[in-house]
Length: 615
Image 1 (tube, helix red, strand yellow):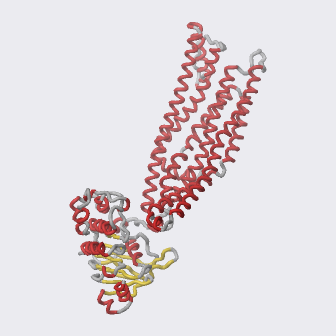
Image 2 (image 1 turned 45 degrees about the horizontal axis):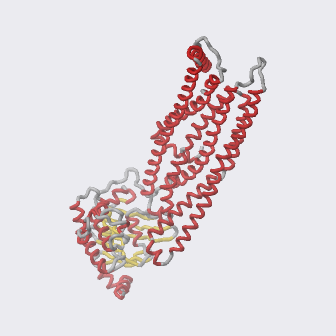
Image 3 (image 1 turned 90 degrees about the vertical axis):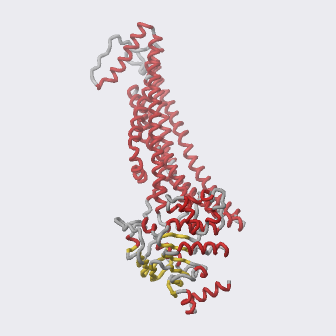
C-alpha cells in the first residue's frame, strides 16, 4: 500500500459511514448491472417463443439452489401467463423485470456516488483546515526558505487534486472490479468456453495500460511543483508591482511567467496524451475480444450441435452473453482512467503531506507555564544565534527592568531586530536563554508569552478589512469606544473620523488606501488596544517622512507610558529619552548608557548621532 494512501486514511475516519455505504451500494450496483443483462434472456425467449415450459409451481428447497428456484419460478409464471392471457402478457412481465433491474442499477449508482461526494467534500474540508492550521503555526523561519506561492499551490491546487483524483480509488477497488466479477460469473454460467477469451484479454490490456502510465506520477509531481512556482511569480509580481513598473521590469517577469507556463504546457500535454490513450486502447482491445467472441459464439449457435440436435449455445443466451461481454468494457476503461487519476492524486498527496509533516520546533511544552502578568524584568543571558551559518548574536546579555525603555541602536545587520524575533519566539536561541520574571521563555506557554508582548514593526502589516477589524485583532471583543480611545492614544483618530465610514471604513489590500504614517499609527493603535505589559517597537518610524514621524513619535510616547518597552531604532532622535541605550555592532554590545552618558564617551554612539545630524 502506498504511504500516502495510509496517511489519507485517518482523514476518512469521521466519514467511515459514507465509505461503508459507498461500498455496499457499489456492490449492489455491480450486481444489478449484471442482472440487467441476464434479464434480457427471458425477454428474448418470449419474443422468439423459445421459453422453457414449466407447468408445475417450483418448490423452494435450500439456499444453494436459490438460482435454480428463481429461474424456474420465473419461467413457471411466463408459461402460466402465455397459456392464460397470451404471450403479450408474458412479454410485459419480462419487460417489467428488465425495467426494474435497470432502475435499481441506476438507483444504487446514484446512492454510491452521493456517499462518495460527502466523503470527498468532507476530507477536502478537513485537509484544508489541517493545512491552514499547519501553515499558520509553522515558525517564521520556515517561510524564509520557502516560496509563498508554492505553499498556496499546495493549500489550494494540490488539496483539490487529492479530492478530485485520489478517491477514484474506491471505484478502482470496489465498483468496477465487482462489476467485472459479477459479470464474469454470469458469463461462465452461460459458457465457460467463451469466457476463456475474456480471461486472456483482461491481463493483456492491464499490462499494456500500466506500461503507458508508468511515468505518470513523476510528471504529475513536476506539474504540481511548477504550478507552485507559477503562483509564486504572480504573488511576487503583485506584491512588488511598484518596483516592477518603476524599473521597467515587466518584460523580465513576463518572460519568467511565460517560461513557467510553457513548461506546464509541455508536461500537461505529455500527461494528457497518456490519459487520452488509456480509454481508446482499452476499448480497442475490448472490441477485438468482442469480435473473437462473436466468431466463436456464432459458430456455437449456428453450426455446433448437441447429440439431441439442439445448438451448443442458445441464441437468446448468446445475445445476453455479448451484452455481458460489452458490459466488462465500461469498468475496464474506468479502471484504466481511475488508475491514472489515482497516480495524479498520490503525487498531489505527497506535496500536501510534505507540509503537514514538517516538524514545528517552536511549540509550547507539555504543562507549559500560563503567564499573564509581567512582574520584574526581562533577562537575556549569554545568547548565541545564527541564521543558517551566519552568526548574528554572539554571547549577548542584557537586562530590561519593568517600566524601563531600552533602545537598541547600531548599523544594519548588527542584530537589533533579531532580539525582537527571539523575544517573541519567532526563532529560538541556539545557546543561552531568555527569561521573563526568572522563567525561561521556552517554559512559558507560547500563546500567553505572545499575549504579554505588543509588536509594532517597520512594515505596517494591515489586512483588507475595516479599521475596526484591523485594530481589534488582539482583542476581538473590544467595543467601538475602546477602539476609538486606542486610536486617540495612537494619534490616529484625527484622520479616521474624517473617513466616509469612520472605523468601519475598509482600508484596502495591505491598507494601501492610507498613507505610510496613517498605516503605522493604526499599527500602534492595534498594539495599544491589546494593552500588553511589554512593547517591542522594531524601527517603527524609520520608513516615515519627517511630518509623519512626528505624529507617530507622539503616538509611541503615549503608548510607552507606564510600560516596559524595547525600542529598535534607526533614527536616533526618537530614542534620546530612553532609560538605557544599547549600542550594538556585529552581534555584540559595544556601548551602553543614557543619551548624555554615551555622548560624553565620544564613541560609536556619538559618531552615529553626528552622522545623522549631518544628514
